[in-house]
Image 1: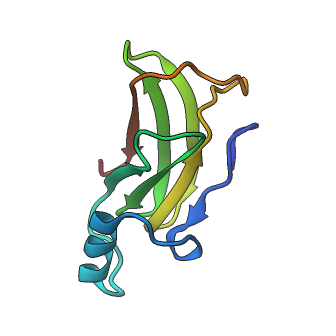
Image 2 (image 1 turned 60 degrees about the horizontal axis):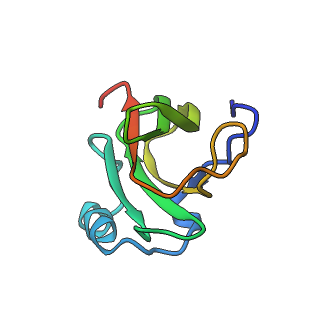
Length: 116
């Protein structure tokens, strides 16, 4: 289930491969399902006007991916739903949960899964 206003989660196979490091990990795994959850680097970083965040879900279950500002305040919940094991990418447009553009600066993203 998607939260209102959250962008849809796009399976990794459906997007152009842009993260060299993350691609190498996926290629090394072959067709096997991921063994554990992992968070990839945002690309591009710094970004204007959007960045892609790659992540891996190790086993099916609830997933939450959120963006926080440098003070630790929640800015945007990108994913809040149950996902199958696999690789995913979401795009953050630099906006908060209310759809307002956020100031330029440093932001962190956090992945929460049942195994990570």
